[in-house]
Image (cartoon, rainbow, N blue to C red; front, side, top):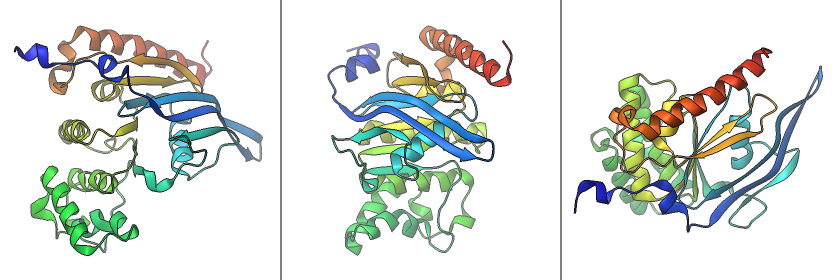
Length: 276
């Protein structure tokens, strides 16, 4: 069988999957001295089991607010978020990776990875077995007893990712996790994340300002408008997997989607800036 025969597109894999996450008419308003500010205005979105969904939009359009509502850090002003049919999302079912690493400085890397397992009263021997497996997956086994200050930014973020995965969440939420990293480290972690995702089969919601990253990683790309954030468009990313991120620019479908979504984002940035 040829190598090309082994490649599959996202649409072919996801077409028979059921939705596990549903946003329905989600609105988020904030009160300020200037009055009410609408951050999100009627977000409706279905996410399928095992889907890698990427989200882009202008700064301040409510991308992070949407994720914060999902993980329970904020509540919607109106609308609903349903996970597995439940109107209240169980925070224990969601792993959250933020832009800046938040490893506890007084804990070793291993102890940081095991922390969610401690909260779930997993026995110590089982915690050690699980953490060892994940540390090995991301090539950090030799640094298990190191403290965060002894690790590079990329190593700490790898620790954050496996900490969010080790308790087997239903959904992995990632808010610009590679933003602060240099280009070489970012590419390394993008490939590592795709490898973990292929093994774990988790549903992922991934926010980024990097359009290349959004296309390289995702099954589907959602574009939000300038504030108040609404869904402007949704694009299937039918680029076969596995993907060679370094050479993705050679793919015609990638170039076409990059151009199309780039134009859409430019329109929204002009709206945000008041240029018509």
